[in-house]
Amino acid sequence: MATHKEVPDFDVIIVGAGISGINFAYRMQERNPELSYCILEGRNEVGGTWSLYQYPGYFNYKEPLQASIPGIHNFQGKVVHPQFWRVDLNYTNKQISGKGSITTDTIEMITMSGIKLASRKELYPDIIVTATGLKLYTAGGIAITINSDQYDLSDHFA
Image 1 (spheres, rainbow, N blue to C red):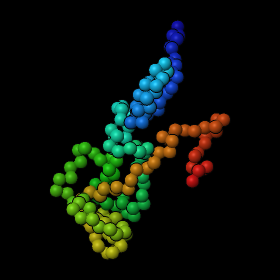
Image 2 (image 1 turned 90 degrees about the vertical axis):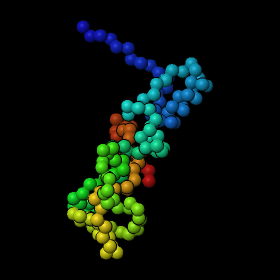
Image 3 (image 1 turned 30 degrees about the horizontal axis):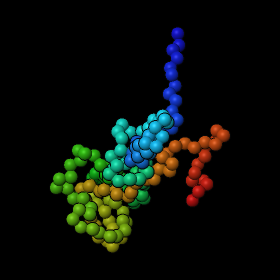
Image 4 (image 1 turned 180 degrees about the vertical axis):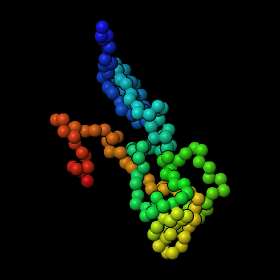
């Protein structure tokens, strides 16, 4: 025998339990207490980017911004993107490019043991940190359809 499950009905659905979503819920409850609402969050905790990165922004948390770094797959040491920095990564007494000095140059090629720069200088890190930035996630990554056809925003806006 099939059981009937009651479908929740809300006046307002708020997508995202970050600072903006929580603030909106608070203000709506303050000004329109008769309205019912729920907050949907994709992660297992509230706070959005504030809890994840401690700064605001709308980013793809699963995929970092990809940059073309010639030969990065040749490197025999650790390659880490700050977005996926492992808590257990041991960098004690390791050489990390940029630690204690800043080198402004163009990467010619990543080798098995280091980084060759266009200036012919070579760096020999144990760990390369690919701090290339975070990939923006347009419209929070939602799939947009119009009359059942997928609508890709990037095809319509520059």
